[in-house]
Image 1 (tube, rainbow, N blue to C red):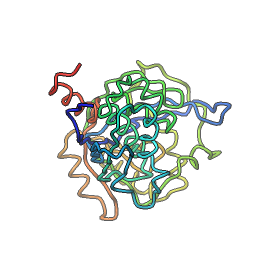
Image 2 (tube, rainbow, N blue to C red):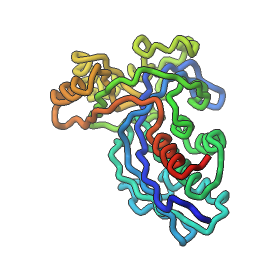
Image 3 (cartoon, rainbow, N blue to C red):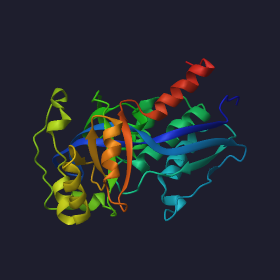
Image 4 (tube, rainbow, N blue to C red):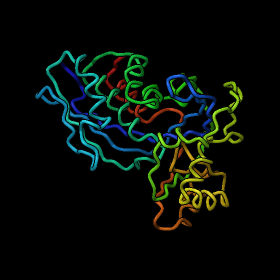
Length: 291
C-alpha cells in the first residue's frame, strides 16, 4: 500500500448537548431522546502511526482503564477484519478531556479511531458505514463519526444536520464522576417530555431533563450550577458532571473562569458545527488531491 500519511495527528473533540429531552422508554430498556449536539474546538490529541507489525498498539494506555475495556482499542478491533494491508498502527493519545463529564470523550476517541484508520488503511468506508460500526460501541459515537452538529433522536443515532450559533463556552467540571446508567435508571428522571420538530430547536429555551436528577444526588453539581447561573446562562451537558456556560465572547468566558474556585476543572472553547477531525481530514485530502 502506498499511503501519503504514515502518521496522522487529530484533535478528538468534546461535544455539548445544548439540550436533552427524554421522551420515553423503549421496550429494550433504552430511552428515547431528543438532543442538539455541537462540537467544541477543544479535545484530546490523537496520533496514528502506521507500522509493519500488523497489530494495534495503544502506546499511551489510559490510567485505570484496561486496554480491553478502552473504546480506542475496541474501535480499532472493529476494523481489523476489513484491513487488507499488512500494516498495523500505533495509537497515542494526550488525554485532557475529563472522563464522566458528559462531553463525550470516550465516544469521540472511538470515532476518531474509525475515521483515522479508514484513511490510513484506505478502507473507503462511507461515513454511514463507519457510523453503523460506531453505534455498536456507544450511542454517541455516530455523531462524532458524521462530524456535523445535529439534532438527534432515537437513542441518539437518528441525526439531522443543524447549525446552532457557534458561541463561546466556559465548560466546568465539579470533582465528581456521574454514572450515566444511574441517571437513566432513576425513578425521578422525567420520561414524558413532548417531542419537538427540527425547526423548533431553539436551545436557549429548552432544558436538560437529566439535570434535576443529578442536582438532587450530587451537591457539587448543584453548587457549581447555582454559581455559574449568576454570571451567564448555564446548563449541564449530557448526564453531567460538566456544566457549560454560554458567553458572548472568549473574554467573557475567561473572566467567569477566573472567578471559579481552584478545585474546579474548567476550560474555555468555542462551539463549532464541523468536527475538528473532519476539518483536519478535509485538509489532508485536499493536500494530496484525493477525491
